[in-house]
Image 1 (spheres, rainbow, N blue to C red):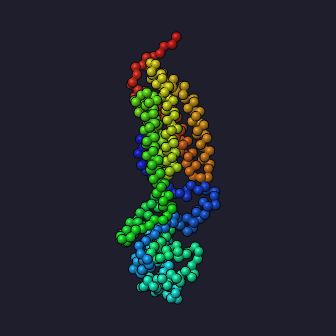
Image 2 (cartoon, rainbow, N blue to C red):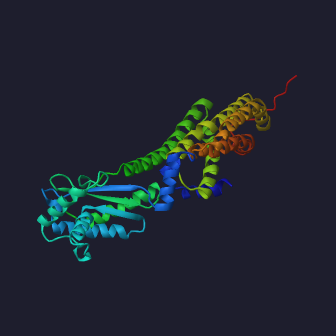
Image 3 (cartoon, helix red, strand yellow):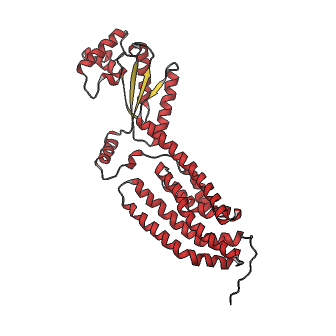
Length: 359
C-alpha cells in the first residue's frame, strides 16, 4: 500500500483554480459561475507594448503587425476574446465609411489613424475609454486578453505562449505584463513549491531533533518511516482522486508531520525506556503501548472529531483541511500502534535483552 501510494505522489500537480477559495453560497461565487458557464470567460490578462517613441503606437506598419498578433491570439482555443487599439482603428474606419467592410483595416497614414482615434474620443464610454488602450503621446499601447476558464498552471502556460509569440513577432520590443491575476498565479506556484521544499527540511530537522531527544542516531533515523507514511499514503490517494496541490494543501502537508511525530515520540521514548533497563523487545513494546496508547488514542480522537466538522464548510479549502488532516492523524495512530512495533521487532538489534524478574 505504502509503495503504491509513494509511486502515485508525482501525479500531484502544483495547480489549482483560485475561484475555488470563494464560499459556494456567496453572491460573488454565483457571479463567477454564471460568467464561466454562460460566457465561457475566465481570467483577464493585460499587456503593454512600448514602442519607445512618440506616435510610435499609431504607425500603420506597427498597427498591422499588432493586428496580426491579435488575430493569432484570437485563434487560440483557450482565449475567448482580445481587444486592442488596432481593433478600435479598424472599427472606426468601417463606421466612418457607411459600415463598408472594405474599410475594416488599418489606414495608410498616421494622420488617418490619429483622426480615427479623435473620432472615437467623441463617442467613447467610461468603460471603454481610449486612454485604456493607448497613452497620451501614442507611444505605448495595451492589449487585453480574456481567457477561457482555466487553472493557475494553465494561465501561466498561456502567458508563456503569448510571450514567446510576441518575442518572435517583435524581437526589438518588450512585452509588458500588467495582470495582477498572473502575478498571484506565479506567487502561488512559488509558494506551493517552497512549501514542498519546507516539508523536506522540516522532516530533516524533526529527525535530527529525535536523534538528540532519543539519544540514538539509529532510532532517530528509524522514526522517519512512521512519520512519513501517513502523509505519503494520504497524498498518494489524493493524487489519484484529486491531483492538485495548492498552497493551502501544501501547508496542511507541512503541518501533518508535526502532528504525526507526536505519536512516534511517545511510543519510541517509552520503548527505549524499557530497552535501556534491560527489557526485551516484546515487553518494551507492550509497556510503550500500554502507557502511551490510551493518551495517543484520546488525542487523535479529539483532533479528528474537531477537524471533521470542517467537512460541512462552504469553502473548499476548509473542506480539504478535514479530508486531509483527519485521515493523516488517524492513520498515524494506527501505524504507530501496529506498524511501528513490527519495525522495532525487525530492526532493533541495539540492546541486549534480559527479562526483568520482579518479586
